[in-house]
Length: 611
Image 1: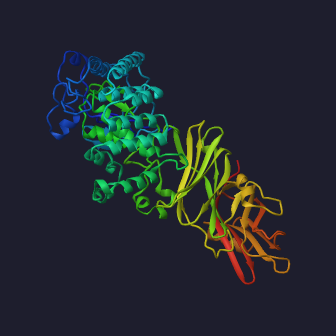
Image 2: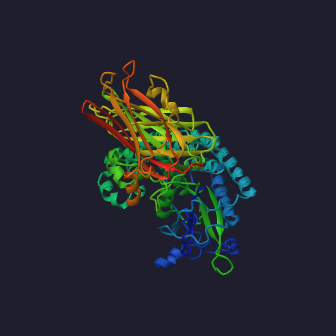
Image 3: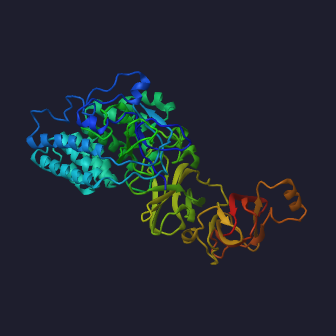
């Protein structure tokens, strides 16, 4: 299973791709810390010839930040909570367990004092010490009493939400956020964070909207700046929009990057603002990295998320450096941002524009409702319904995806990314294959998605689809698990038993459904032919086929007369025994001829050996 994490510290180059944000800062020896000695010079400072960190650089710098509260305004419990939080993080850092993974990772993204690399697939972090969990619960108990005594203490509210999330207390985080009675925008942001952590996407989005509306204008401008998620090629044009002009741009990008369109709300948008909120909380107090908060830590958390586990690591007996702190982000995580081309022109994009495993990603995100994403074997087929096209999105869950056991949730959405409302159809308790039907009026982006709640896996495909024109006389064809033997086959009836993919096994039986939008009769029958031709064949194979010595190039060739349906309907279906032919790509062409007019529809299918 893929993983992602952060680490801190410089490392030797290696071909292994990691995701640990390793502090380039050296951790003080335990005795030096206990004696109150100053922090040692960090590796980043040495490289940049910058001065060493000041003594006790882990303490937040003095500030007039209203969220911290002035000493005169902080109550007794609030003051105790501040002291205990600082002591907890000191003890937490000193007691971190050693991590035995990522020793030779390559720095993927240098960020000031820290370095990030992709660690999807590495060993998980060590379990947290039991006494650290107990100490966190004691801190949370004090924070709860302090918040009850003074709900307007923004620092206490933020820390209570932070440690509830860190400890895995989802409901407590929501209670703490709702109990916040201080600065309006801050309380709303904490609610958005807590609700997002609980997978309540709609409510979380609403809370973040209220937070942004209540913020001072300059802070709202800062929080809505998504430059860190964008390709550098886009930075200049994005910055040129200004604070007021970027809202529509943001919503378009958040929509394009949203992992699943079939779910209500936009969890990726919420994740961005949740990272802003959690980073703000981290800036208010000590964190295990043992660094003052800075732009490098902010960028790391906005781009890749905040650590949810911590450890330390050294380079072995030959490495004279003291242990280094490692922050581990949730794993596996993925790059959900589409390519620059897809952002600029989404209605011309293809499935290649959405690659969640992209290297050197500008962002990564680990969804809380799914632990893995894979490509979805699929088939799109279009059928006329008057002036509208009915799009069939077929899917097939292959064993390789390891989706986990049923039930599944399937969804098909078409969206033009303009003022036109998106159209979505979903199916709960869906099978491992089938097809969903949705009307298609204009060229749109289609997202076909399957979520396995039990296995916590997702498979999806996102690409552009075009409607059929009103002059089309022959639909696409949809592969079925078996042909429909009834005299009046229909798309709606056969969608549930769609094969769901253009990849088939040789030597298997499949069905085909299509529609003809021209009349046939015994007096004027139409000639129907179905032919499969191997692609990429050698010259000798083509020569052998042309003189009848080989059927490997044309394993399927069917022709018959269609005299029309008794009810005049458009639907047709047949069963095809596809022979056990060499694996490879074949072109399957359906052709209808009559009265001097020929129509055809072609799709490429992949044939794999039978298991």
